[in-house]
Image 1 (spheres, chains in turn brown, cyan):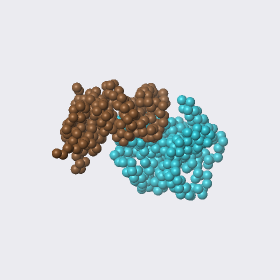
Image 2 (tube, helix red, strand yellow; image 1 turned 45 degrees about the horizontal axis):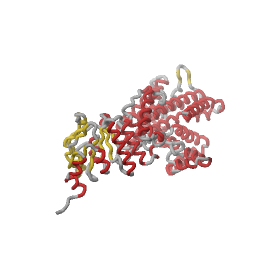
Image 3 (cartoon, one colour; image 1 turned 135 degrees about the vertical axis):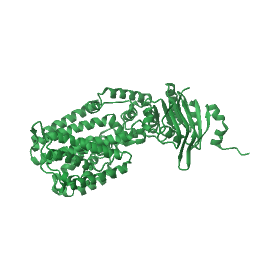
Image 4 (cartoon, one colour; image 1 turned 180 degrees about the vertical axis):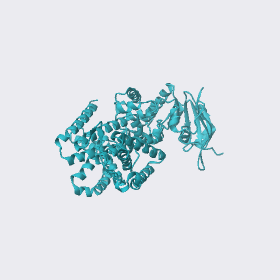
Length: 255
Length: 330
């Protein structure tokens, strides 16, 4: 299977803290990759380094075989990557629809004349973009909230809106950072279906999660991090039986 | 869509009413106040574009007005350029300076940007005051020619009224278009959450520079038009006090609301003229007003959840739809 993202010897140190240490992972096309590990294991740091938000202390990141180490976030995003955040980050004062339209930033290219002299309501590209965004909102059951201010949405809808915004950029890879945080079991089940549905449409999904039911249920492959190092990798069954993973989560049995 | 149509009709009606206003108001002094109001409205709109839409707290807008004004005055008086060349290049010049300043502080966080713009304002004023061969120092540049286009001179208050009104309408429409385009959405995204904005593919630094440059074009144009109207460029018109006063026009009206900028400017331009005793205490009054506004109505008169929306909310609450009340009172 084709490798979309590959890291080589990826390390990120904050002073003396080794948040990531020589991590080598690959993200394969059309898979759901789970990333798990105890708190502080370096999962979010991994996302931040892969997407160019942090520059790695050592090592390289490749997209489709092209090195992107040192690129800025927006140019990495341009390569076909989108993410959501552990703590929801929406544009709180903008409407729900505009939030998703911002997600389409890289797809809309109005000329200067269209920006200044034609009503945005009449611009063809704007109309197409709006239609697409409304379609996305409908998919997430948010179409009735399109003109509300995003900051006023209830928590669950905010989570969905964040995913909708990420999908608006037509990414090849979607990175979800603890999407089920703060959700009840029903909402989590709904989320699992949603991620599965997105994946079935051909999108590669990487999920950081603490919810084992969710991650074991949807992941094709799982990577386990602990203290910045990759300690295990494999399908959910293998991971559940892996001694080092059990040790990382539960501690070692003393004789 | 009905709502949109209503707004459009409202805007056209407002412009027509403004066109007819000189039929009612014939007093030269009142016309003069209105002319100044139109020009300062453009300044407030440009501040709104930078501060309200992009969240870059710029406290040195008067410097850019001064740059536009001096550029236009020097071109027209010393080099005898026609009005529209001096006026348009003043906008470009201010925009370029804005782009350079924006580029230099593209990596600065918002707090530092504020300090830099304050410093830039002071530097500009010192240059206006002391670069005597060019700016004529404290004497200023007198006898700036009145605007004229295609041989038609806007040399009376009434004639200038229509020029200033036209200028305001054009600037307002352009700025509104910008705020509703992809560009405006990017600015707002940067204001609300710059990290999420960059993850939407927005190059934050470039868009901040662009925002600063576009805003500066409008400020520069307004400064240039004002100097052709007052016919005198004085270094004492572009002080930090002036910047703060202009910023307050935008804040009073409501950051992020374009009609709010007009309302805020109207209040702060007309109030000092209504009573001279108010003029002397205007900074005290405005200072108190800012404190009160920031505590109780940080969103201004017409901003989102500002005083205006709250009043509407209270009225609606009294009439019907009690369940709507929650939306307006946090």
